[in-house]
Image 1 (cartoon, rainbow, N blue to C red):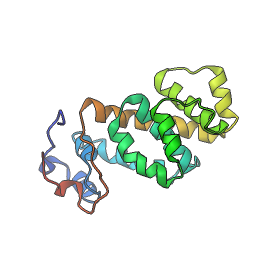
Image 2 (image 1 turned 135 degrees about the vertical axis):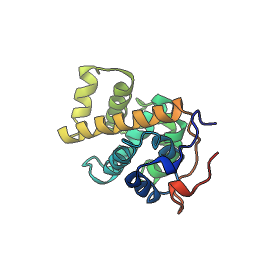
Image 3 (image 1 turned 90 degrees about the horizontal axis):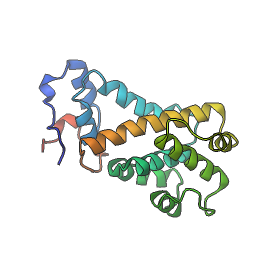
Image 4 (image 1 turned 30 degrees about the vertical axis):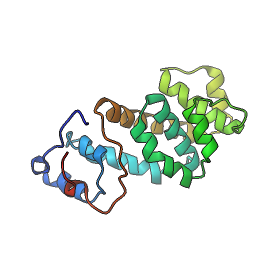
Length: 183
């Protein structure tokens, strides 16, 4: 059960209310809408993570699944399992991430580098030079920065889901966020 109640859409500024009605129902967006001043840019940043990165979709999903694992966010993991599959992340790779076997020889060298880099970033404020240089061998400078941005976004997203106990649901329906009933 979520730790916060659903906010009252009637209390939202008109621009926020209009923006939220354009989105599919999503318990996370409902939770985020408690902060009416940041919900729209936060959701827009999520869109940018899917539309404006040079980082390939498969790599993005590997990063997100790793962040979900290392932050303990079942919400993020549940939402991105099907997305990662669609982006080309196979079942065995997802299992290895869930088991934190990110150094498995079953993974390609580039996947191991990306997953190790991501896990280190989630867990530590600074990462070892060796981990950075290994990732740098496979990623452009732009992609390295994009990985850091994806990690930061999904770390925040994961913490919102875990600290506020946002319920795990499928969120890709046809209703708007404001049309769904409160709990």
